[in-house]
Structure formats: structure tokens, C-alpha cells
Length: 178
Length: 271
Image (cartoon, rainbow over all chains, first blue to last red; front, top):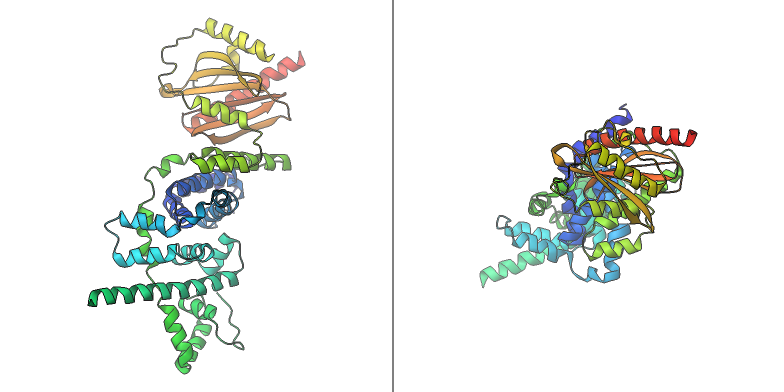
């Protein structure tokens, strides 16, 4: 087993590489670039404060994602709610990114938009399992929910996504035929 | 892996777990057989599988939109940072308070202001205030000041008198930084001594001392306002050193200044 002096270097070396992924999750939760920036910074600093709690040999990404989700739920989201800023759709922020990236294929934009329109609970679960590649069990730990809740969220999300992308596909076909 | 209860009907959740390869091989084989046998289940499976999409590829555009300077915002840790474990519950509370304060303080927009109001009062705000003040210093701030040992000793004596400490240049011995000036500032209505030092590459360091009641505390590293900070407490005085130098350099200076202060103050207390 590693000694405690090895905790710090694990985090110091591993965390910078995770920053873009943390930012993406922050963006997907908030739909706002500035909030995503702040979430990444808060997460890094909280990780430093709690470096002694990280267990060597476990996944660093899972640990810092857990911190980010906690900060989002307990601090940032409540602040935004009080300001009434949740009225702004997350998909608007994600759309802005896609629209400004000429490399993004239309089909991929549709997927990002569809995920952006999911309810937050489903969206965060989709992001962790389908985008970040966490297992159900790992996502359950990050989100601090039972594994059964992960399953039901994904089932509902798939229903919505299937409907959304089915409609989008139908409209696209109709527009093409006209 | 998800455990499957074969006595119950196959739910959407189980079908999704099947699509996501979260079922054990034996359970997958069971679902395969059921899909072969049951057209309604197969239709449901086909419907849910429409959402088996290239999510990771689609979200790569969001990944590449992340600000390129994120890594610069992340202050690296000194090598032994994590070996500094909290020793008591009061320290844990203190750490939470620091984290809450940092989270609020570093958010630059209105959200940060709001978050700051929502968090409980940060008992360590004096360090935040010092860090924010010191953040305004550039490498050129003290470039024109050349203080001799005699001048420095005199200034330190005056500043120390305000605090009730016999400050001398010996308090700074051993650090890789040169004395530049010292002055008295005010924080929370009380005096704060600021000793300005020029470290390697003329990076300005601020060594600050103020009266602060509470138990003695060993040096702790933190990052505030983008500065590396080491702080400790001895004999109802709070100490901190902060600067734009590397965290390792600030950390090293902090350890030496802590040892010096502890030695000088134990002498003062004994005499």
C-alpha cells in the first residue's frame, strides 16, 4: 500500500489532465462557461484541501468528479436558482459551443443538443456513463445515488433521446423531400 | 455487474443495462433468448437502442472548447502537501471553512458574490485580504528598493514594536530571499506587519504577522488569489507568507520562517 506522501503527487500529476473533462461536465451541468470555469477551480482547490482523503490505487477522475458534482449541487446550483438563472436552457450554452466549432458534424450537434435538453438528473447520469465512460457502479458513487437510480435515469433518458432524435430525423427527412 | 431477477418481467432498466453491457454473460444470454422469443420485448429493445449514440464523439467539441488556460489556474501542490493531515476536529472545520471561502472568493462573477454570501463567515479572511492585496504586486514593485541590513533591522524593530514582538533580521535567516522593506497595515481593526522580500527572479514575497488568538498551529499550505500561501500560528500570533513564486519556493520559505519564529518566540517567552 502506498504511504500518504504519495497521495499528493498522484493528484498533482493527474489533475491537470482532467481539467478539460471537469470543465465539460461543469458546462453540461450549468450550460454556462463562467460557471464551468468556476466549478473547475473550486473542484481543484477542494481536491487540494482534501488530498489526504484520496486513496491511492482508486480512480482520481471518479474522486474529483464527485467533488465537482457536490460543489455544483450544494453551492453553485442553489446560487443560480436564487438568481432565477436556471430558466436559461443548458442546451443553449452547449449549442453555442457547437455552433462555433465548424468541425462538429450536424449529427453530433443534434446529440449534444438532445442531451442538453434532458432534465438535470438524467443529463448528469448520461454524461458520466455515456460520455465519460463510467460504469453504473462508478456513476452511482460519483452522484451519490443507488445503482437502481442510475438505471432508471438512463432508461428514461434513452426514451427521451430516442424520441427527440427520431423527431429530428423525421423533420430532416421531410425538409429534404420538400 | 447488475444482477437479474429472472422471475420478474424484463424492464426498460434491464434492457438498457443489456444495451450498456452491464449484465453478466449468463444474463445477457438469457436476454438474447427472450428477445428472440418475444416480439414486444424486441420492439422495446429496438426503440431504446435508437439512443445508443456516439456520445463521446459528439461531446468532443465541448471538450475542445474548454479554456486553454485551465492548467495555469490550477496551482501545483508541493511534494509533501498531502502528508499534512488534519490532527483534530477543529482542524477539519477549519479546512472546510477555507475551502468554502476559497470557493466563494475565486468565483469572479456575480455568482461568486452570491456564493460568498451563502457560505458561513470565513474566519481566515485576513489571509484572503493579504493575498488579494499582495496580488497587486509585480516583480518591479520593490525593484528600486535596496535596503541595507541596518535599515532593515531598524524598520523591523519599529514594525515589531507595533505588534509587541522583537523583530530582527534573524527572523529571516536561511531563506532564499532578500529583505526589501517592512510596514504596518491594518486588518480587522488590528495591526498587521508586512515584510516584503525579493526571492529568486525578483518574485516578491510578503511575510505577514498579526495578533491572532488561538492554539498554535503548524504550517499549512494553501492557494489564495492565485498565490501560494503557507500559514501558521504561534503564541497568539498568526503568520503567513505568500507570493507569486513557485509553491515549492514559498513552501520552503514558510518552513524556515516557521522554525525561526518558533525559536525566537520561545526565547522571548522564556526570558
